[in-house]
Length: 170
Image (cartoon, rainbow, N blue to C red; front, side, top):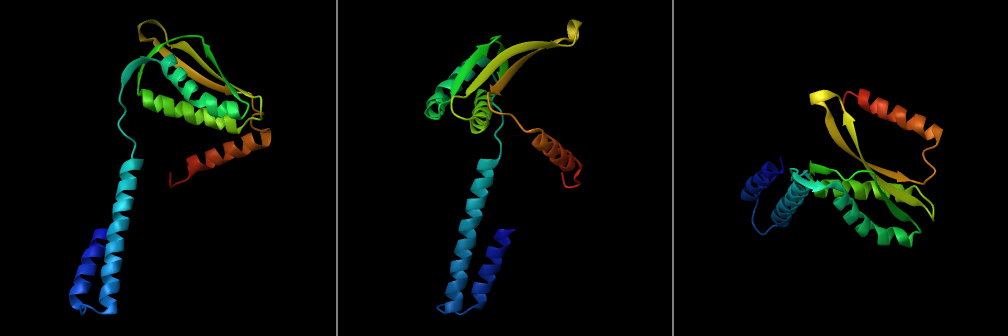
């Protein structure tokens, strides 16, 4: 705990002669420790995922907003975004989180493509289960015209993922 380091520094300062170089160094270092502790604390608060703000909305609205946001950047690289709305479902989710996921997927797709590529954002619904326990699900697919992952890389990525799952640290 860094705050105990600062307290320790206060104790050290009490034992040091004021005005000496060692005392001034100690005061300087205590200030730096406090400053760095504040930076780390603020970063951790910022990095902590916020609680989702669940609202009901049409998923196509968020897709259209995201497309409007991303299209100008992609067009500079010769890429297009196309929408295929096979369904227009209402969902209960955090719209900002859905938008961020879409932005990340679109950027990943753009990075995987050459000029004149196309990114398709497709919505659809599917029913899982049967009878009174059936559940209607909304699906959003982000599809790019990039070359895909080479078979060698697919195998390596699968092996990496498997080893991560088996790691005692995870």
